[in-house]
Image 1 (cartoon, rainbow, N blue to C red):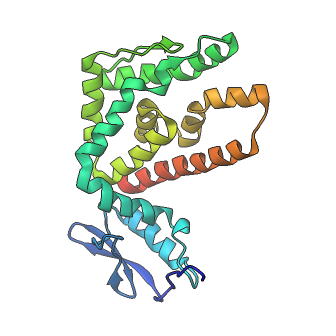
Image 2: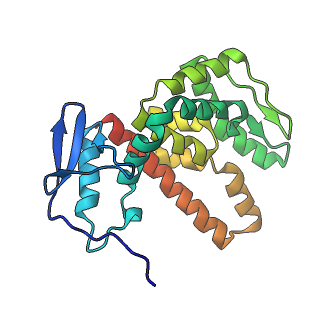
Length: 237
C-alpha cells in the first residue's frame, strides 16, 4: 500500500498583516502549524518566504521542499514553549566548545586550528567579555563562571524564531562561539561552516574522501546555511 500524501488544495498563497506579525493565507485561510497553532511569523520577509514555498508546491505537498515553513513550525511548536530549556542547552555548548579543544599533533593540524580558531575566540572574548580557555588533547577545559554566565545571558536574549536558527547553527557546528559568530553577522555562513570542519577536512586531506561521509557533510552544510538564512528572515532585511 502506498503512503498517503497530502495534496494541494489551494490556488493562491498570500501574506496578510496581523496585530502580532504576519500570516500566510491559502485562498484566504491562515496556515497553522502541525500542532494547530496559528503560523504567525515575525517579519514580512519570512512570511513571503513561507508563502513562496506553499505556492511552489505541485499536486502533492512535499515538506522537505519547505525548509522555512518547517523551521517556523519548530519555532512555534517546540522552541517557543520551552525557550528557557533550549537556551540553557545551547549555552552549555560553551563548556565544551569545539574551538577550545585542539589537537596535540601533527603540527600542521595544530597550526591550522590555531590560525582558524584563535581569531574567533578573540572576537568572542572581546564582544561578550567572555574569554574561554584552550586545551590540547583529551584534557577538559575549565572556563570561568563569569564567562559561562555571559554566554548564558547572550543566548537568553534571542527570541524564539532567532533561537530556532541559533539552535541549528550551534548543534550543526558543535560550537556556541561559531553559532554566535554566524548569528552576529561577523562571520559569513559559508566561511563559518568551513571553520567548523577543520578536523574533518584534515582527515580527508590525509586519507581521501568517503562518499557516504561527504554526502552527510553536504547535508549538514545545507542545513547550516539554511539556519543562517532563517535567522536573517527572522530579523528582517
